[in-house]
Structure formats: C-alpha cells, structure tokens
Length: 464
Image (cartoon, rainbow, N blue to C red):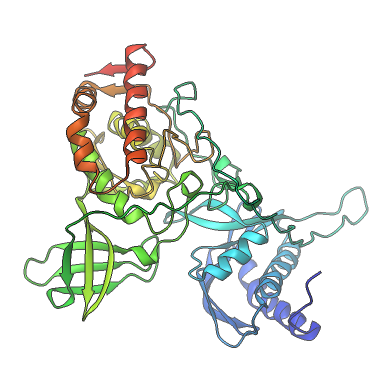
C-alpha cells in the first residue's frame, strides 16, 4: 500500500472543510455553487451541489494546485468523496455522484481515472454536459438494523500493456445494429451506456494500445498574425482553452483550436488521438460539403502570436441555429428533432465519417417558423472522426447521444450525392490526402460502401 502523503490530521481537516461547505448547499433543493474552496493546498473552482431526484450531485469545474505536496492528489480527492458521502447520508440521498466538469490538469485526470471515474453525460438546467463522474450508493437502514455506510475504495491499478501488444482489429461497422430514427433521451438520473465508458471509451486496464500516427499534413499552411485579430481565450465550457478570433477589418469570427490543447476524448481507443484531431476537422468539413451538408468551413492554420507559433484548426464561428442541447431536458421536443429527416441524413453522414462525438452540443437546428418543424440541421465540431480503419463505433456498439447507427431513411438528395462520392473516389482521395492518411481515407469509403449497400438491400429507405 502506498504511504500516505498527508497527515491524519490534515486528511480529517480536509474532510471537515468539505463537509462544512457542502452540507448547507445540500439542504437546499435548488442548484447552488460556491466560487472556490481551498482544501489541503488545492483550490477547487466553482463547486456545485444539486439534486437529481434522490441523487445528490457534487462537483467542481476545475482545480489549481497551490501549496499541496506532491503525490497528495488521491488523498485530497478521497476527502471530497468521503465528505460527499457523509453529506448525502445526512441529507437523505439515495446516492451521490461526485463529478468534475472540466479537468485541465492531466495528472488530476489520471487520478480520477485511477479512482474509477467514468465519462457521464449529465443533464442540467441549461442542457447537458460531459463530465467525469463516480456514483456512490448510500446504504439506508433496513429491517431495523443499520446498513453499512458507503465506502470509498480505490480501484486496483491497471496492469501495464505487455510489450509488443497490438491494436485489436476494428469491430465491423455493419448494419445489423439498431437503426436511428427512434432515438430517445435517457431521463436524468437513469443509467445509460454512456455512463459506463471512460473518457477513452474503455476501462484503463482494457484500453487497447494505439500508436499515434506520424502523419504530417503536407501544406502549405496559412499563417494568422495576432495583430490582425482580436483574440479572446475561452475559459469555460466545451471550448475551454480555445481562442475566439475576430478579424479586425471584416469582423468575421473564427474558433482556433490549438493542437497543443487537445486531450484524449471519446474515440481515442480506435486511433483518433489527442494531437491529431486538428487535421481531421478540415477533412470532415470537406466531406460534408461533398455530401451537401452545410457545416462551418475549417482549415489547418498556424497562429502567430508575436513570434510564437502554434498549429491547429480554424473553424468559422456560426451563430445560426440553436444547439440541440438546449432542448435536451425536454424529451418530447428533443426526440422529435433527433428523429427528423435532416437529423437522420446527418446520422448517415456521421456513419460514413465515423463521427465518435455527435453529442447534443455538436449539432444545431434551424426551425421553420411556420410549421415548427426542423428545416435544417447544422453539424459542428467534427474532429473526433475519421479513424484509421473501417470501424464505426468506439466500443463496438451504438453509443446513445454520441454515435448513432445507420438511419432508417435518407433523402434522395443525400443518396445521390453519396453515389457521386463513391464514383468519384479518386478525386476525393486526392483532396483528403492534404489532411488524413490512407488508412483513414480507406475507412471512409468502406463505410460509404456499407451504407449504400444497405440502401440497395432495402435496409435503408430513400425518401423524397
């Protein structure tokens, strides 16, 4: 067993600090937040406490190490968990979910993964959010006897990958899985398959070894100079760490996503690795244009900030439409949008590019003001796509809210464009070679052929 870094007195004081901060908030049934709390030399930012039915939720936005000794992270996180369990027990909760909305420190992310935290899509009053979370059931007294209290345990560390291990072959992306079009929202507080996937898609001990590609985009690459743009660093939300650029002359806005800021997310287990998504963004946008699907233009650029250069992807910043996440807590409305034909066409396109992260924040809807029907769906943020190989799903099966299967129907317009893409493979390959490597290109056409074959065999119907 690893020797403790913090003294027993410091650990007890940390738990008491958390208890004092959390319990008053847990007594209220409305979501509450405190700007920060300093515990054992770590500052936790925007600590949130809320209820989802009988489940208490306790989490924080980010962390900042101040004076904590090295190696104390696990003990400090355990103090959060123990206090949360005690507060949940006193507040009458059936369970407590401890979560981190955004972890900007790679070491802290490793600590959470080692302690059994998994990826979880958490609904809240403004839509949804991807978090790392761990659920602790709260044992209640039964049969006149006190049930044992919930305990905090640290999972055993994953065994190292044996030398020479290779990536398992990708799961077939065939059409026998359920088809989209009958999509539904998992009600807040219930368990979905998404909840059991780690950020890399599998438990750390089961994560396949993936070799990062040495592919370098051939260029030429456009350089953007700081003096031409007003640059605002985004500090919160899904775009944290990215730059919102406004051209000083035209006023046009763009989102710059630096390569250095990429972190492992869903899809990494099939070869879509951090540090390589920037080159996938323009490839996915190009394919969307070929398919007739409107999406923000994207390109690889170099951002020059007073002589300091950084490569990344540049995408148009669009304000048109409303993010689907805005309707996530209204299942009837959201399900209707997800089952609309424009969204089903997007599901078909996502199948072709193997988009791993079509969460409700990554597609927008334009509503017809006369009929209230979905007139158009706008996909955004498609860089978690185009794996090296034919696989469609990061875990080998449909991942609700992230990776939809083949749709039940596609429009005649999309079908005709996909046929043209199949026939014009040579030209499209040449264009894609600017961004992605051959194995990734081959995967696109393998899945395209599968989808068109499903139309031919009657598994997908073509509608006007």
